[in-house]
Image (tube, rainbow, N blue to C red):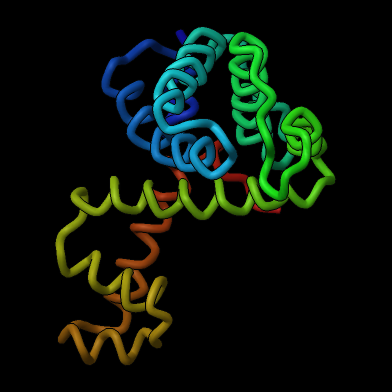
Length: 196
């Protein structure tokens, strides 16, 4: 029997749980939709391309193996997205213009190159977006006082002693709150967001 993974990616790879898949769709749909919109996929076609990306991810998830390289999942997702967009343009026999007026095929090739600035921008956007979305999804799992302490220290950047004074709790309680939320975030994000 395979051990149950605490991370979303691990749970998706190990089972076909509808709630986990819905969490994946909720997590990634806005990111992919925004990317498609900003990168020349017409809005009326964007939902179809998004659905194709998610379908490919669902179909191929059992094959995905994290190779322990930084960004393995986001690279895999980016490749699927690029291929779905490329297929969309080919099937519609359209000559899309990339931002700046260049050929869209060349633009997609740049996005496929891991050393290209466009790819690096995708990586930064992915990690920031997924972190924010996961935090939004995790927030209801914590007491309001725990979340407030975490937010003041980890997000707002105030000192633990200042947050403790504001919230009427001990500095140790602030550190514990921050640790609990970050632990849950790391657990859920494992494999989705890799630190470099």
